[in-house]
Length: 179
Image (tube, rainbow, N blue to C red; front, side, top):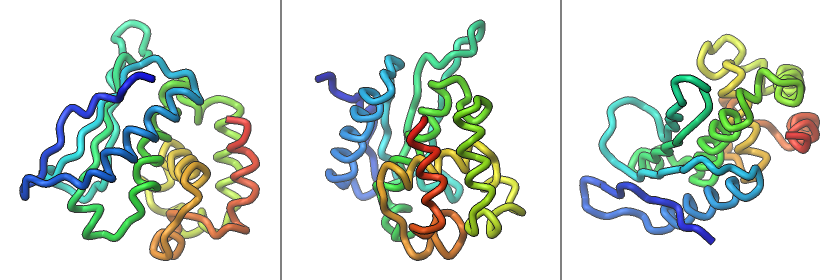
């Protein structure tokens, strides 16, 4: 089995949480296998960016075909720790963006549209529909992917509308099975 390239592990304290690195590598290998992703995925575990993001994914696209040639997943280790967020959810959220890109903007295709339609019928959606960022189809898809894959949510995520109660997620989960 091929290894995942951890490009950089850097924190101000000089320490990286090894479990984050192992979880990230394992999740990347799983998603590559499940979705037959051949595009290289690099990972960075850092503690240096500005802004509020706990994780971020960049996809480098071929200028002619507009298909991904490389993905870079970045996790902000100290921010994750401070926010008390679930590392599995963050990793799977970022990988949800990769699945979306690899499938040619999944949210614009029938199966992806079905997921978004199911999300828009949930109670959680009512809490975020006014938020221009959180209500973007790509963000909603990544959140649904994360919850479907990790199965974990924090109370804070549910209260803010960024995750679903188990009952509320049932219809979304059913649509995610087709992705």
